[in-house]
Length: 329
Image (cartoon, rainbow, N blue to C red; front, side):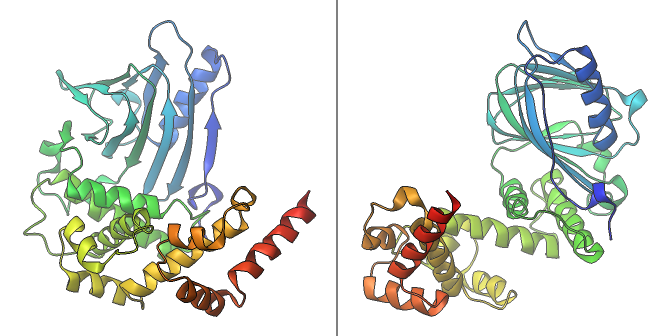
């Protein structure tokens, strides 16, 4: 078993309404222990407002959160290691980054490749959502020749490699923890292999496909499917075109999980329909409208497959949820 702090459980924190110097010092110390040494201060006259979640494995640290106007300076003399990191601007405003005397603007959707042993600054002049992934140099160097020369630069916004990495990270959101050492190792390996493609932009064509790449492609593909579930005409061909891969490759990826594209789509649609039927806010909506919104064009097929999957009709599922919701009050 992993130690309590490194089993990928969600460690949440949020700044107080008016954080004082002591809280900021505590935050910097804690963040430095888990990620890399930084000195953070408000940018301008406004308060420092931060909220986020840290998740740790023995060789991986992930932070996702929002920040107000802030200025962070990394402190190489306090850095516990030279392990590189990815800083991904998910949404909000631009980030101003400066490393090695060079300045750049990191727009939403782009990724900065950095190292804590290099002096640098980061400024968020607007409220921003970021994802930071601390990696292990010893695990990344065999995957990225000349790694040091690739640090302190921006990766192309919305590159395929970055989208695969983001899709994989999104697939981990539902995990409350990872206590199995073998599973923790697999996750760490996958993240490093996908990060290697981000570092080595454009070099993935000649790179042998790794388990991390397959996991990333599958995760990105599933996220794409879930966004399109309402489309009754959703097909493997459409997903293949959007993901720029072959239909055969998609079928192979699902086969590796013991399922098919059609089965995944049907299960996802049924699961979404069940959630909507159990939602009190959707109680006024006809069942056929919910079925169509989930991508079912044939109501009789929806009723039949729903009953086969859950052992009850959609109407019975709604009534059961209504009774349970009533007993919770």
